[in-house]
Length: 216
Ligand code: AMP
Image 1 (tube, helix red, strand yellow):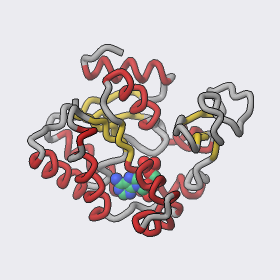
Image 2 (cartoon, protein in one colour; image 1 turned 90 degrees about the vertical axis):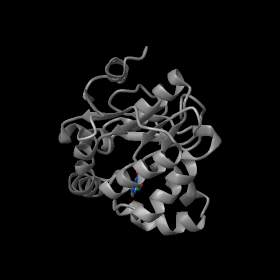
Image 3 (cartoon, rainbow, N blue to C red; image 1 turned 120 degrees about the vertical axis):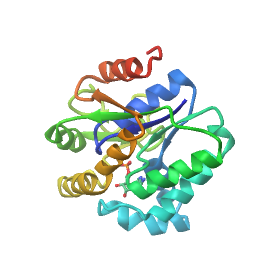
Image 4 (tube, rainbow, N blue to C red; image 1 turned 180 degrees about the vertical axis):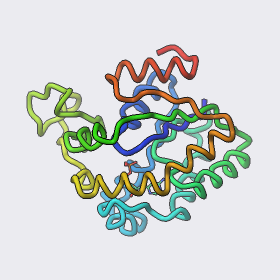
């Protein structure tokens, strides 16, 4: 299955993509994670992306399209994939159509995850992620014995440096301006399936699987 999880920062795309990736045995492709790995490894890409990301802006379409072209063409995506964080602009969506055509593949669905903006701001201010395994936690929901250590792998739990209230507001503004038009792009293709993302992780996972007609 070739799937896109679509929605604002903090809606839970990463959390849901990880669950779907396990049940469907297809890779979770997060462009944000790929960029953060490049920043940590201090590659040329990482050096270019670092300041842009920490200010809450978008990395250029050219760079993002090249990343996606190379990942989707790789062996690990041959049986399908779940995209999280891409496409974020209409030119990226158009480029994805071209890449999929070149690969003789087509998208199955775009899950449009809906949520109230205030819930997003709240969630992001309490979000922690593990430096080692990438699991995401929320201090309001998850009972952590030690808020510095991952219960899964004992890795270090950190707040993302773009989750500050000011940067979150900027990311939401950019989402409205540049990313929301992508929904209409896919609606016109009949691919949008809307899911209420304000419930628990389990409920949202169930609703996504129902929308896709796959077992949870
Ligand atoms: P995310 O983890 O998806 O919230 O992404 C974190 C940051 O990475 C974003 O705020 C952007 O700066 C950058 N980024 C991730 N995906 C894209 C994309 N498709 N287009 C442009 N910038 C991106």
